[in-house]
Image 1: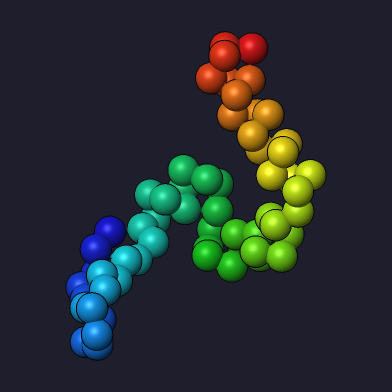
Image 2 (image 1 turned 60 degrees about the vertical axis):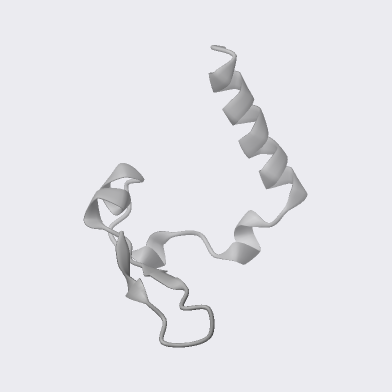
Length: 59
């Protein structure tokens, strides 16, 4: 959800997380999201890609 714009160079858009987003992923708060350190491993990325393509292929 768009929250406005930064008052600086480029006037980038600001976004907020909605309760619908949290509900969709079964989260109670933003802190429940995994840290970037935990999602950056090659193995985890490959696992996520495999899940995506399995669903896409109807497996």
